[in-house]
Image (cartoon, rainbow, N blue to C red; front, side, top):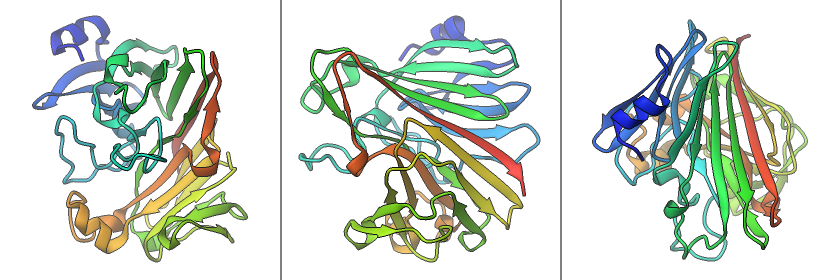
Amino acid sequence: MSDLSTLNQQFGIAEQLEFVEAAPGMIVARISNAHAEATIALQGAHLMTFKPKGEADVIWMSPAAKLVVGKSIRGGVPVCWPWFGAHASESSFPAHGFARTVGWNVVDARPQPGGETQIVFELPASAMPKAQWPHACRVQLHINVGVKLTMDLVTDNTGDTAFPLGEALHTYFPISDVDNVRIAGLDGCTYRDKVTGMDLKQQSGDITIPSEVDRVYLDTEATCDIVDNGANRRIRIAKSGSRSTVVWNPWIEKAAKMGDFGSDTGYRTMLCVESANAVENVLTLAAGESHTLTVIYSNEAL
């Protein structure tokens, strides 16, 4: 990661994008344009906030989230790469991969013709531990901030052998209360239920959250809507290049053990709907091949 003055000189955009130090060692890109506001930590290329002008926040950040070098941030959009969840064979490797807790480089930033702001991050090869990831590749995250938020996670296999790729944009959303929401778009899909030991089940109707939920919906590129009657709005999650959708709420005991959900009832005001390639949908990326996982987040009144 570059220092603040270099970042602002090379990539700052007058009245749209500046870089600030939000905590010791934690540099954040702060975007404000005609359409929306957003903040993104260079550690993990971790989008922390997104708020269209005149509307409510679309992304949830825990009020107790800690910005600490080398530690994952509770909330926002963590980038899970190059595996999702526990590593398939090495339990000592970090859950959800290493990309979310290392510094990414800014490689481009520019205003867009419609008034949006685009910023591009790249995971440096030096941040990929060879013992965990011996494969040659390039990884970038393209973020476009406008009325809608678009995120493109791009992986290029620059080596001469194929490698497995698991990934997710582990997105946290704010909700009025778990009792007031349902997730539409996954009716009829099969899923692995992590709460019951990865049993294979089938969804019937919309998803509701009456207790802990931790599910990986398989073989679906469907658009999902978080329908929040309490907030009178719908958050839409449209994706491509993603064959899994993960739905997660830790509920009471697990949220309390994490210690950074903010309050005893913090779990009631957040919900994760994650665009992923996980479990049976882990990819194999051939030599010379490129893969892009794209998600577009938008907000509309009911």
